[in-house]
Image 1: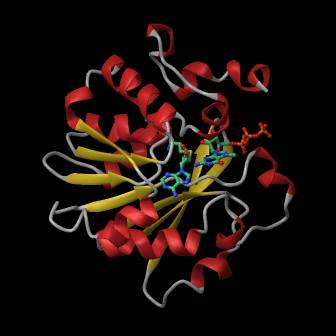
Image 2: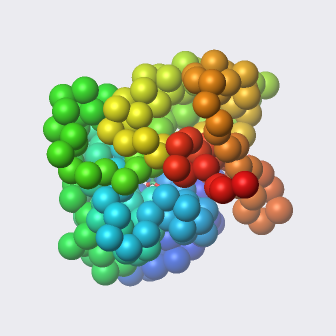
Length: 207
Ligand code: MGP
Ligand code: SAH
């Protein structure tokens, strides 16, 4: 498994050699740094509070913090959060990220984020492992975490929502979520379509 992904280490984290930590799931799930920088330009920004709902070892959370945002980074895995803390320190943003070990669906429902003036929620959920790519098409319910429930939870927390999703995700599954305008962006890296990012609410680019 590791051999398949190790050659991408600097694409995932340019500061890899300074002691970046990843567990097995993260090797195939981390958002590559250039793509995470792009997400941060669109979803972060100075002085804003942004929730990274499935932060893993911090690929997105670190770039959101580097954009000047205060980040509430949530993950169910305490091990990944520990790695995220290490990685954030390597990028000099440890003081701008608050790490929360929780199921984001429960955290959103609890109302604990209601008084945090959250500007937007970014989520990069589990897609169900690298085998996702063998399906001709995927629906939101077929992700490793129910994408519809995740979207509803994110929407409870903020009006602006961005989701990083598999490139084979069915567009009709997205359309069934709501009638409102959304933006579907293809993310290319090294001339290959890596994934799509979908934006709702104020994260949709102005026409
Ligand atoms: P990939 O599709 O597994 O690799 O992941 P690639 O390079 O297209 O496949 P291969 O044919 O060259 O082996 C591409 C990118 O998608 C990863 O770098 C991650 O950013 C993202 N990604 C992949 N998976 C399986 C997940 C996942 O489960 N969750 C999230 N959030 N991102 C993932
Ligand atoms: N964007 C991250 C990678 C995210 S991978 C990065 O660049 O590092 C998806 C993450 O979702 C995993 O770390 C997994 O532990 C987490 N996760 C799964 N179910 C969750 C839930 N219900 N609430 C919060 N996090 C969850």
